[in-house]
Length: 500
Image 1 (tube, rainbow, N blue to C red):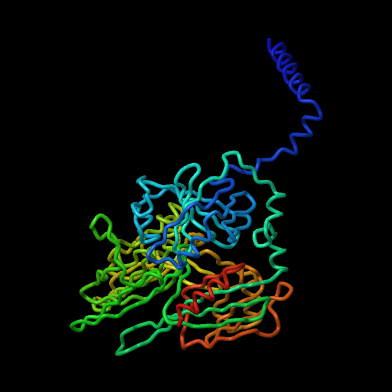
Image 2: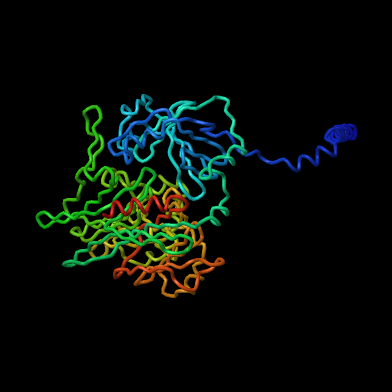
């Protein structure tokens, strides 16, 4: 019986292999997963109308110039008018319409004739640069905000097809070009560096913040400028971040203000006769709290809260830039899931637990809290560090530990060194921090006393610097945002306008 069964199995297998044939077997080796071309927005759209907001950077005549202009969404390129994005990456998210529009654009659904409680947002970005957020109103209608103006676009034809030949025949500013071709044409790089320096007045800490703008063209410096406070580039435009110190009855409190530069620091938005967003007075600690900014990114800000009148507790906290003075700190699992929480515990168990076994610490909550972490710079990269607070000899003290995980792009848009850290230190042994352009054309080196800009030649640091900026004593970087392509000139124009 067993022999009969084995014979039947052999016959079936042989028949299957024969049916495949040699040609079919060879063909199967070349099969690969097809490229995903089911884009959330695809085809040709036309600008039909617009709405000027109270903070529009365009005049009405400039906005009218967009009417009738085309937008194309393709797997290789996306363009709206003369603004383009190569090798686009599409991301989809669903958000509550009211909250999103208020916090992103300081407007409300009624103004834009949006009736849905939830809307779909399609974020488009290139390999190294954000493009635009598009609000998908329907299968054939989208909405985009450009320089504070809301443009309504409608799909031109349902069956429109866009081939590569047409894209290559488009005007020069929107033709497809590889990254190498762009580099050969011109290397335009710019960086906004946010800096802070410590001041001590009557033993009380305070910090001075400023922003340095550096732009290079074809590895030569064309602009170095400076302004007070932090100028932060965001998807919705530039924001200003300031720290105001208030002293009342001997109590000192710091208030962090973050606001769009075109709207001012004290804007109030009312919807349905109810104030639902305002840069209101901070909910300050009655026992005095001073705030130290550790890191600023597109969407998040890492701070140290210092309750100096209560025996000096120092807490690490991370907040969304949109509501740094409201709400509660973000947990590490909110941005990294369980992986982040596990990394926090791992770092704590590796560095803190072994050192605490033989100490009498009178522990209070001597466990790592998920919201007790921050971003710091080390050896040219941004890292997570956690903190635990406890009482020792009647005083509040703390210990920090490294969290063994890489901060996600949601926090840091670009954090790579094209030149290895060892090579940078060999060039300048006193280097404390460094940044390299996404164009791989310049390297920014920070020492104790100055910022030095070098060209990158043949994948290594050039011999002579092309620019320098003097640093204040103890000054550190808390923000580094790069711009390439068409954005350096846009940033420079905005920096000059805001700095005047």
